[in-house]
Length: 299
Ligand SMILES: [Zn+2]
Image (tube, rainbow, N blue to C red):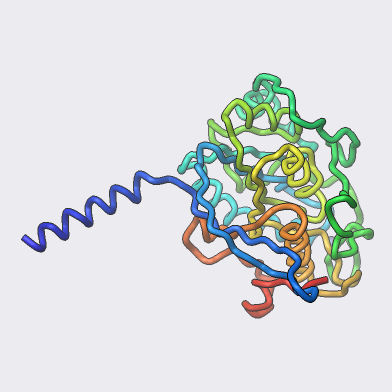
């Protein structure tokens, strides 16, 4: 009798887990605390996948910087795994390879974005332009200057620096597109797609955090201005940062500094472990100790 009762409860528990597709995230954010010390906190959050989008920013097939291109290729596989799991749970996937959407002309994903009915935004969308799309610039009312100097555009290669050129033609093929996904690099189209589905939660992944993941018209600054619940998938991003420029830290620490900047001024972050149940992604070149990777130093 006892065994039978146990087996019954086990079966019921299994059914409960399988039926609940909710995303259980650990959202990390930062706030000023006493004596200039910063408090880093992690809040549990449960997000309804049907009200959530995962936007993949600028994961192009190539890049003018060889190191940047190598890191995108390295993280594309793990990102694709997260995309598949999120999609299976009902998250709406938007591929956002900026300035190369013409490559996807007439695909169902591109057409879906273009066909979504126009819905007026609660605040005007960014109008200034940079690198082929509208752009949300650094906002002095809301954020400090970026903690890394990317004024040289951030080639992180040792020795000879890469020449800037038009290198990308499409999204990296490693990231699969499903029939139900959408593809756009446009702020209004993104807003229309989200309005159509009643989506209020926006997850940003991809590159580069100090530039496009903050500034593009579908990305962090614009989504925060539009009132969405925004979160950064912090292990599946990268920066353009040359360690020879201030503050003179290694490339991965530079990325951690920008993640901390985002957590301080824009939105919380979480890792892919919350979706995969596996350890967070880590670049091969990141040889820092685990404790150095979990809490970035203050700038
Ligand atoms: Zn380079």
